[in-house]
Image 1 (cartoon, one colour):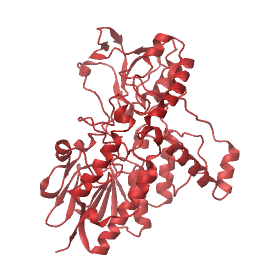
Image 2: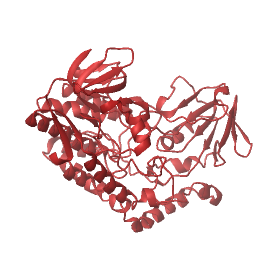
Image 3: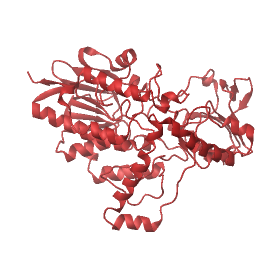
Image 4: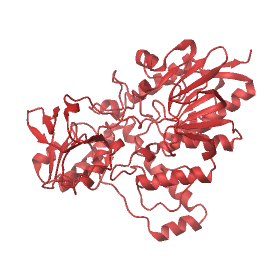
Length: 488
């Protein structure tokens, strides 16, 4: 049993941010557990062709580790991963990371007020505090389709891209048209023999204003004090303005929808194909996507769009709901991730042995500020329920959560507390307000079903306010919202 004051799980932006700020606050008795071989989280794991961010690079980075030399407006996976590795090196957090350790669960000891963090095939850890930076985009969602095991060719999820599979001149079937799929589909279409894309629901796809960064601008950012910061601040407020339409003011969205429909009509002149690609729900109800190459891909002679649904997979292809067989040498799932139900994959037991996944299933995925859960002392989730965003950079949210956790640790020290947990009253009030707001938002009112919603149709994913409101609400610890347990 290895004993540490704090255990951090994961080395994505969340885990790295927590580690860096713990060090800056003078707390060094912590360990970061990472299942893989390097830092990076989703930006290490997702290596599919065309993988890039849909938030501008200068916002999708740490505010205290600015990068003056992003190569373009929206950076690709390799550049973001390189940035994260560089930050990990420069901030000296690698010595605190234990690689190759997969966390399988954690159990709270009521008598001793500590967590036992369990790992797969390794030594367990004991800690006063656990910070789970596991993220929501790390468990691929592979749908259960009849006959999938009978397929004789390669098949894989976009998040587990098999680079050993040569797609050149092959018949390829892609199932799904989400955020990852619209990035890799245009690229593989250029090399495959034939590509069949199975679309369940069309997405709103905006043109992507992605341009190379001019060298003169990089020089200005590097040499003029405050220039990069000013540019980042301008981006922040431009992105923040998008929340006005999503967060309850849905009447302004038709203006944006007209712009997208004009773009679609310009790119897809065929009315039948255009109808297949036109959403029947409001902009923002599902994740809004961006691409300049997705729509034109369906004009290629070697690309077929199917909206008939997948009925069955056979040894050499996919049969749609109309009984038509689509030949396939390779199947690629572009079907996203387990987000709302990601907690089902963690075996976390809190006070009195209560299982977190069971509690969420029975009573709803409810937390306090998206970070803490009543009955689970000293446990903090990064980017937990209702703190993901549809309009701005989640790195901003991560930074606020990191600051809040450190304030909680300081408050515990000040009070001589060995444990702290949100009161049930505070948690309930927080969730009542959040659900009241999301019910007014486009995610609930937009006429679609998305991964934002749980099985009861409640949005447990999106933060339904401006991000500066999250900064305001987490700027200090409201002591009355917590139960403080002092040492016996």
